[in-house]
Length: 98
Image (cartoon, rainbow, N blue to C red; front, side, top):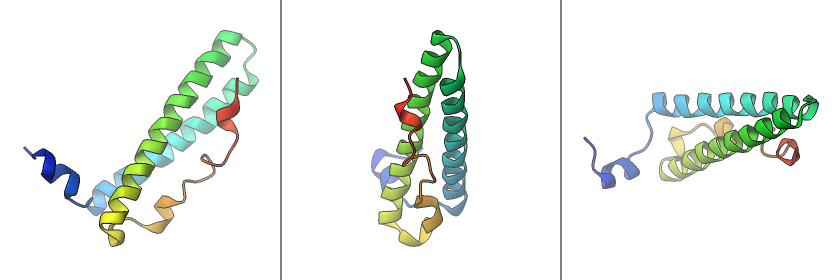
């Protein structure tokens, strides 16, 4: 079992980094799909549900990105620069759906 000081200071392994990058890609895909559904749904309750889920998955993506940036600052060689691009999700307009 890791202590709190050990878990926060160790760099990510390449496998862990790969998992986080894959998770970011999955979250981005989910956000894109939810944005389309929220924009095209006819029923207000479906639009609202998708908008809520969209916000949740954007937060997941942002949390993963922040964690990766933190780990990259600790050990720059551990995290590929391509993993930090954030894709199109962060700059897109999906979060503005109501």
